[in-house]
Image 1 (cartoon, rainbow, N blue to C red):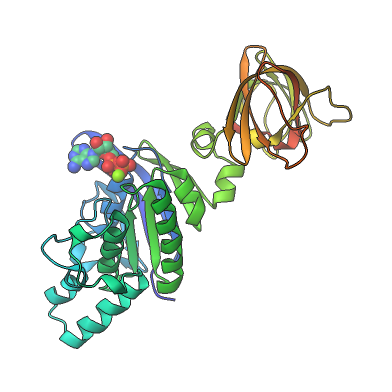
Image 2: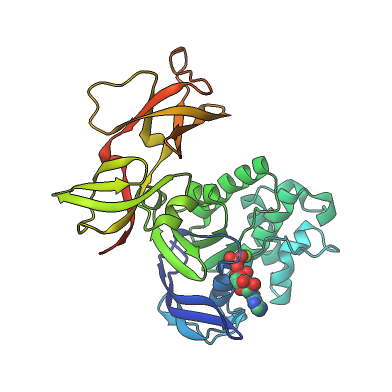
Length: 365
Ligand SMILES: Nc1ncnc2c1ncn2[C@@H]1O[C@H](COP(=O)(O)OP(=O)(O)O)[C@@H](O)[C@H]1O
Ligand SMILES: [Mg+2]
């Protein structure tokens, strides 16, 4: 496989006195599809620009493979970037846009022919060689930009929110194609997005960022199932967060006293001390909804009222009011079952397995 690893060690970056990146440590593997996910303004673009060499670091170092590139200019790094806004040359046709980096290098004409055709085929644009950028759709323009970024055969392709200007359906299609393209070219992809669906869909691993820091690195499943803190739990999909105090610890069973809900049993892999303040995350799909008081359940049972139903095709999100709290429950639509129908203001019961709860914040007493 081509491509190289990317190692970022102790990177800090400030603009003036404002810290933008703080103590970033990352090891991105050779050939990996790696995403950086975080809200707008958290420092994703700045971090990409540090890897590409467009920004100097305030502190720290960047390695591509075994080679330190911290002080190398962008054109001496085997890296290329695809930006959010196509950045094509409007006066050049598709072929010449993609050929441009090779023309600069004064490559031989038949090599240019061969390579441009190859990369345009990879991005499925072979039929559009002679079109001008303004004759292309947004998705096609972005494919041209990707082909142009690949033509110098970089070890690492950096993609900065490349789909954000496209509509939802096109975004999905291009993401699937990008995944296939990654398999085909085999180099390292670093993909930046604020959209968790995009990141969860294609990445081998994801770094979740907020306010210039990396909060967690892991596979989509790991960060969804074992979020490192409350921010990650809420940023990746919807969740219910409960805060309370640990009352009792019996082995892996923790009793937490939660405001308005009372004592909650949680089976945790993390050990905590009694009297710790904790935050518990419980995903909506882990909660089961009943019309009548369920018998033989292992978990806690709460009585509530259906406050809101949000229909979303194959499932509904049902908000159940328990005391003063609104709890989000994901209810699948079972074809032909009939009994899964819940109505507004209906009294219901909810329950869950204590092993479904995750401790996402712990402040020791
Ligand atoms: N050249 C710059 N000068 C000063 N501040 C900047 C500059 N570039 C980015 N910033 C600031 O750095 C922060 C992170 O920006 P950015 O890396 O673009 O975030 P993201 O890509 O995650 O939206 C923002 O607060 C932004 O205003
Ligand atoms: Mg950005």
